[in-house]
Image 1 (tube, one colour):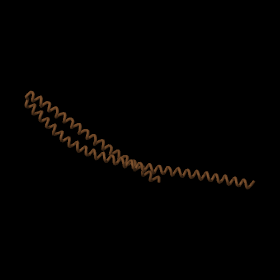
Image 2 (cartoon, rainbow, N blue to C red; image 1 turned 180 degrees about the vertical axis):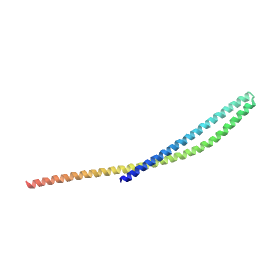
Image 3 (cartoon, one colour; image 1 turned 90 degrees about the vertical axis):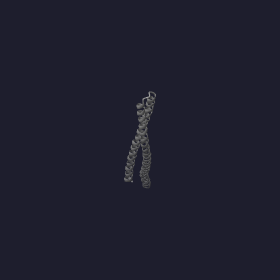
Image 4 (tube, rainbow, N blue to C red; image 1 turned 135 degrees about the vertical axis):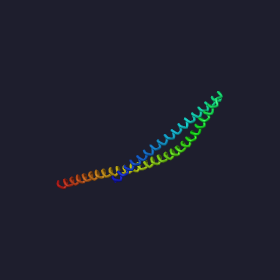
Length: 156
């Protein structure tokens, strides 16, 4: 039974390592999603700044500054749309990584429970054997004492 327990312990360790690997991957992908969200925020801020500059150029009647602001606004909007696609792809990857992590965590917990159940049963069995040995010793000693008392009683 001990080799089986050692094998299960190695499996628990293996599943823990797989869970840690999936956790790291999930954290990496979640970080990539946050990075895409920050980049989208930067592009939105650039577009807002370009709109403000464009208004200023219209008020000052500077057509070159207005056209420049329009191009910066369009470019920021174009980059933001591209970043939105990237963010959506990364969120899909994040969802998949989360499912993978949850599945590996459940498997590790299941194998850990099996290991703990078998270890507990082995402990109970060991305690039973010790108790049986103690009971046998007690009964043997009692029989010996009784036989000695009978022997002494018959010799007197």
